Length: 187
Image (cartoon, rainbow, N blue to C red; front, side, top):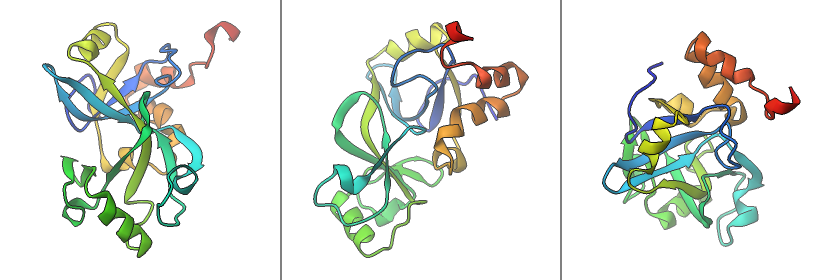
């Protein structure tokens, strides 16, 4: 697993263990857009909110899709990543077979017709955003590790274990972080 890369579209930010922020503690963030001049847009991909999409979004076809916390910005808005590509007009390619956004009405139709499975799309409330230069400052503070994303990492079957599992794959120096206590003072 490549690590210590620079932030860019399609890469993952893995929070360092002492990051105490409510949203970003033990988080893995997929970078959707990153430009040093304009800032960064991403989605936390490892924090399900234990609600179903239908419990939060009205007028959506009946489904069992879980909902994830994408970040602290605009928590009233819905965002989604998927593997549908051109089947969803207006989608933006992130990397490999992973896309962001697209025609929500077409997506609702595909879900209603049972042509889209939970392994093809993830829904998020809110997003993670950094203004120009902010993520660079946080990188300088060693708040994040940057690594390459994969289909398996982005659509992991066990998102709650993703942070620790990714650190373990990065080698011993990072694997010890995976066992970092939630509150080191209580250790």
